[in-house]
Amino acid sequence: MVSKESLKRFVQSTGKIFDIMSPSEENVQAILEWIMPDLDPDELKVSLVNYYRYLETQEDRYVPYFDPIPGLFHRYGMIQKHQKIAKKVGLTWWPYIQKYVANPEYVLEMVGRKKPEIKKMLATPLGDSYIQYFTKRLYQFFDLWFHEFPRWHNNCGGLIVYGLINKNTNAWGFKCRTCNTIIPVEKLDEITYKHRKHVNGGKYGSPKSSQ
Ligand SMILES: [Zn+2]
Image (tube, rainbow, N blue to C red):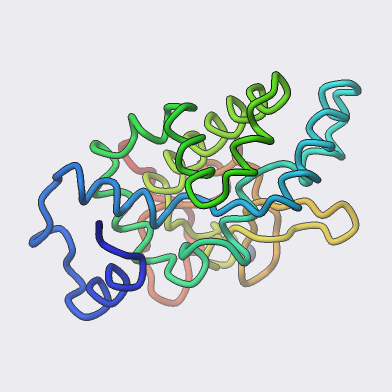
């Protein structure tokens, strides 16, 4: 299997992973290895506790403490450091990787591959429920992020990025990098646009994409 490091070097040096790599099983696994979150046992413990509290109370304030997506964008994985490449690779390989990303058993294998204690922690009814949620959340996010981004803000033409949107509640989401407007997912089409028309901003609004 191609290692993360060699894949990174390869992509960086050629910039065209798709021309050379065929969609073999091995390459699909290498891509998945690259984009999947790495879990830390201590943080997983915190996630499971908060997930349990959420199931008990249905209070949204617990969600940021077990949602896997913020982890992709801070210290885990390659995505934060190599967003452009990760997005390009993800979009191109989506037809091959989506069935894995949608499969909780596969995702469990993937997140537990380096640490047996992670697998053990997830081998409970709560862990099983969590991995179902985790898989669904990853799938929805990747599907959206690969297909609908990059996008820009109608008002100021700023790039829409994923990041911390509220320090007090630790909430993460999409926001405009230029003016910091928070962009709810359900308003993506309304207040952002997909294809950049003007290099210096998009104040004339959204040329609606056909998708
Ligand atoms: Zn803006």
